[in-house]
Image (cartoon, rainbow, N blue to C red):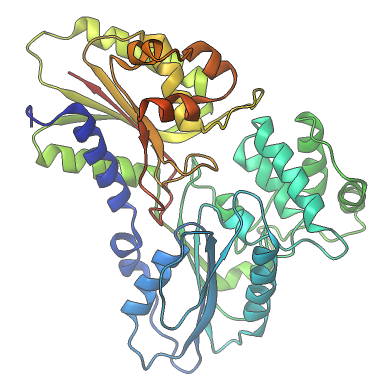
Length: 427
């Protein structure tokens, strides 16, 4: 193990984390029996939807009557045989997603009590399932979502607004069908709140129209007047609220979280142990601003490195969660690259410390990279090329910084999503 370069060790850890949250590993123990008389109605949404569908198709024999639709992010589809997979917009909804969500809603509404709905949900489902309420314009919804995503608002608050603008989210799909439902969720949400994962289309919702208005006010997001009017009518009781826990529709729904960020970290740690390396999991619960988390992690690393024996074997520190970036500059951003650049500036080339920060879905924010890699010589190499690390961070351009150094982590779509993965190697 000592002969493997640090960069390769970090990438091996990331690959093991991604493998641990693939559909073929997680889904089979949770798939329900085929219905005795009706159809298996498969509906999916999220970045893992295509992989989940292929797993389902291979699990059930051809004699099982199967229908449905899954929606995934552009570039994340896979060839399927019985359940079509549609590509649509993420992180902002688009027309393809709107049409797909409309079709998926109709499929759910048409399911009978003899059928069984199998819902396959993962991170990204909120955008992909967006079907604006009657009278609301998709472009207005996109504008509000763009404002929220750039504001640094937590995902639960963003999804509160989404639920109250869409006909499919916030438990509304559960209310739309008389069929029993098995909902299998791959969580990208810290705490695994089923009402937040993909905005909970089959889950009870405790949020309100009034709370959605408060979120938009607190984060100073401009709201087009038709959307504001809609939310105000809901807050006044003119429009029905999203279904809550007492709604009888949820008696037909069996929801299971099949994997999450902790699953990914444990998969990486187990693989590293097989290779003879000690790994410590700090937790899958970290949230907040990426730069703030980088400062905290740098403090921990400095303490650990100063106490390490020169002969101590390499040690991997693993963590997950979901940080946020408040975009104030003009750069291309990415919360994992921003974390990593901030960490590098805090550590100032500390010897023996290498790091990787990436999103398990292969997409850091809206870019084409999963994240990036940091080495002790990163800042020195940047300075030799005239790159001002402080200025790039201030401009939210960590993507451009690591791209110029050739240190972006490019994996392509992984077709899973268990949120952020961070690995810090002490050697």
